[in-house]
Image (cartoon, rainbow, N blue to C red; front, side, top):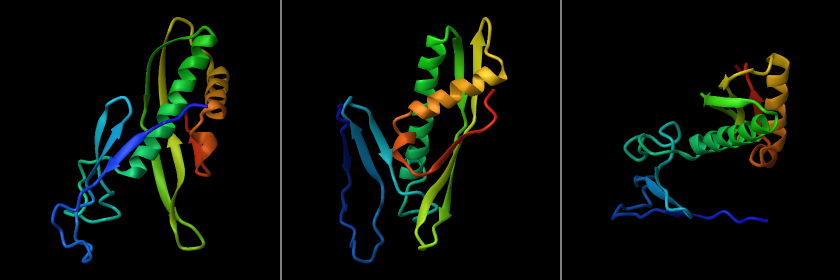
Amino acid sequence: MSKHSVSVEWSRQGATFTDRRYSRAHRWTFDGGAVVHASSSPDVVRVPFSDPAGVDPEEAYVAALSSCHMLWFLDIAAQAGHVVDSYVDHAEGRMARRPDGRDWVAEVDLRPQVSFVGPAPDAQALAALHHRAHESCFIANSVKTEVRVVNPM
């Protein structure tokens, strides 16, 4: 099986640290060379200790689910002979509190809008393509978050 690597780097940069008033900004470096400015969510740690310009883990989680679904959808649509011209998803994840008091990403709604060139699948066939993509997605198969495809177009 394949292996997927990322380096996550953070530095105290002289902050006291034990007072918990340190920056949560950090860097993700992926094995292909992409570097992403990351931080805790300002919804979790207030500014200036988080950086709203950074990608937070919760956003990255939603993006990974959306991206995985899209990549499978594109492949399955191509295998079915459909020509996808564009795919846009405005995905949204929602946090909730579990009975044990811990927070988690409870739901992720994918809202794909797909444009086709030539004959497009009807609503039932489109739903079936999204269902197959969801069933195939490695990330969706790895989590307990409820992942839904909402009103695909």
